[in-house]
Image (tube, rainbow, N blue to C red):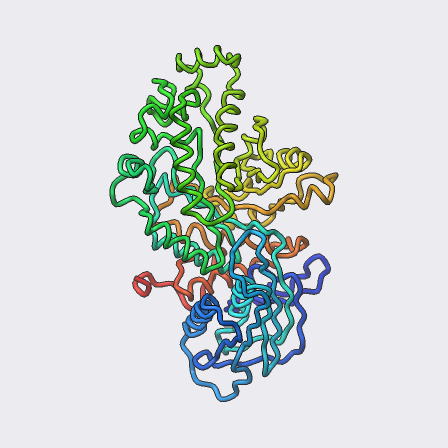
Amino acid sequence: MLLPALLSLLTVTVHSVDLPHLPLVPYPQHVSLLSSSSALIDPLTFTFSTTSSSVLLKEVFDRYHKYLKLHDFVQKLNVTLSNLEVVIKDPAEELLLMTSENYTLTIQTNSAILQADTVFGAMRGLETFSQLVNTNNYSLPTLHIEDYPRYKFRGFMLDTSRHYLSVGVLKQLIRAASWSKLNVFHWHIVDDPSFPYCSVVYPDLCRKGAFSPHHVYSQSDVLKIILFSYKHGVIVLPELDTPGHTLSWGAALPGFLTHCPGHGNIGAPYGPVDPTNEAVYPVLKELFTEITNVFPGEFVHLGGDEVHYPCWKNNPNITAWMAAHNMTGNYDQLENYYETRLLNIVNSLNKNYIVWEEVFYHHVDITPQTIVHAWKPNWKTIFQDATAAGFRCILSAGWYISRIAYGEDWQNFYLVEPRSFNDTATPEQRALVLGGTVCMWGEHVDNSNILSRFWPRASAPAERLWAPEYLTDVKFMKPRIEAHRCMMVLRGYPAEPTLSRGHCHVEYTWATHH
């Protein structure tokens, strides 16, 4: 897949480490070339074999067979490799954050074997194998790879409230994420502008809160996304952000939001959830009970960011309630009151949770299992304080790919390192950093442009979250990310160019894929 014009860039020395120059994104932890010989395959007859009875693995085989057969191919007589043997050690197929994705891959001229702890490790190894195929002549280098992710939490966030994204587009984004070995889909499913999630217990939330009856996710749609994600080794993490960012809840739930004319959200006379209204909490209990039952992952994201205090301040009922509860003027304390009650509800449902950084900084009594999600520019301070307090953290600051800049802006994302928050941080603190999430907020994207805007720019932080920590040389990444982009185009995905000039062997044609 490598472009001839880029080959001259592949002699970059990376921190004095002698790395084979391979078209892989993300780059593996350990690579050893076995010889200068190549293995040659026939994509029409090449097979994947296993003794595993896994139905999921068979589906993964089918997927990668299709990728191999996408090219124009002239039958060759000098085939040396006809099969990749896949060995899985653990037959369990539960997908959790700590599920092993480790694998080893050995390719020789006439034999190849992929060994993985789990079927999800096999998925990662098959992606590596597929990227190694030179589609000009169907050769592969002879090598040995030992690989595993440096971070366990490698997420991508999609906002489906500000603009609706169809189920088909979400699937394309999830599929592309698996090509860069991301493993968590953070679904920011509702927010102020719309409530597209169709709840069973509160169906009016989407009936009255969505843009239209066509801009919703039915229970069937949600289950399709969860299953599709699972088959690609991706956990779905739902976020219902409260008490702020809840304007779309109001039409279905009278009294749920704070009334504050002139001080509400996005021009409305309402602001955050009214934490003084006792009727709020049974609603939250029923809704989060449903969410924890629908989404099988071990975490739910509770939001907690950007609570608009002026709205609370300008509601006389809240002012009187705060006076009666010795909170006069202390809106941090009022937010703490709300968050504590919400967290008690979620704790009762035996679900772990993730919160935006404000919840930690407002001194809410969060459980030791809480993950703190940093998004502001001062994230290094947040990580220092949160890890010192024993909390696990994930990063999104620096990875808002909804913010675009002229030129090769992926390079900015590539240089962000989650564990570089403090030179004096202890090894124990650094270990509490689980990874991060690439965020695409929805203000300026919808079905028409999100596919190309997201990828391959998100492949830069994806490599940071998987590959060795020392691998930070942009020159070494540049030809690989463009090769990765061309691979995506070949697979039918409209990934945008990463370089100011160049081309792919096969160009994307809209009519071909629609």
